[in-house]
Length: 87
Image (cartoon, rainbow, N blue to C red):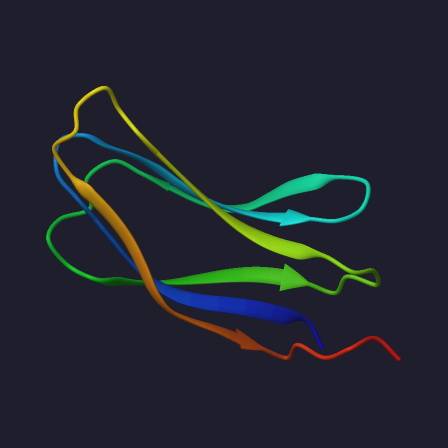
């Protein structure tokens, strides 16, 4: 079974840049999900398919903004499905 990550995000304002979800393993970094720009004044559910990874890994959230400081990015309620230690 393949792992998935679920979380809610809020991206509101003129100065919003990008949220990215990266999977970092020993040898590489892979972008698994990305959202950019103002998404309105609301919380939105994201689903990130992580798949099956046979080695130790980390998940990283990376947020950027434009030159404007008007706007906010937030994440909340992070959950994982079908995650288990390798056998």
